[in-house]
Image (tube, rainbow, N blue to C red; front, top):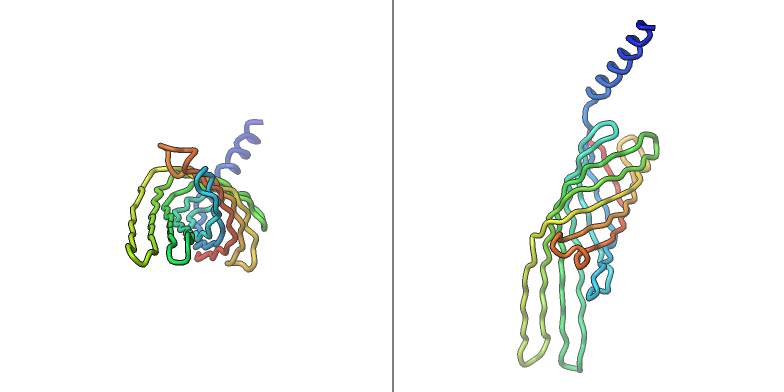
Length: 189
């Protein structure tokens, strides 16, 4: 019995060591999607671009990311006067990812991020032409994500991802966003 226990322990140890020695995979991931803001005063969905690099082997990976979303709105009050509001949201975050094995693999995780908003307001009036801009942030927040990778070739995968972001710990309800993405991942090694 002792020999069998030793053999099982040795087998588990060597498979764990072999897995730990797998070279880490590096992926460049890019996706396009939409961000829907859960603010009472923001009633729009904005186009969003997400770019990340995923480093890991086996079931665990680390993923630094950068995202940008933008929205512009023009309202006309009379024939000569209108306002234009432009908002650009930028974020930088780092996520810890857990993933399943297999040809089609699910993944999930989350992490922290820094979120910045750039606001631009302009009154398009022939007389005054008033304008102002301000920056809010960077603010510390967090994100959670879940998705699925589907292989296209040995190095290219298509993926879909759902995310929830809290863009400010100071105002978690006022800075929440849900996002959906579709993208492509390229494995470098």
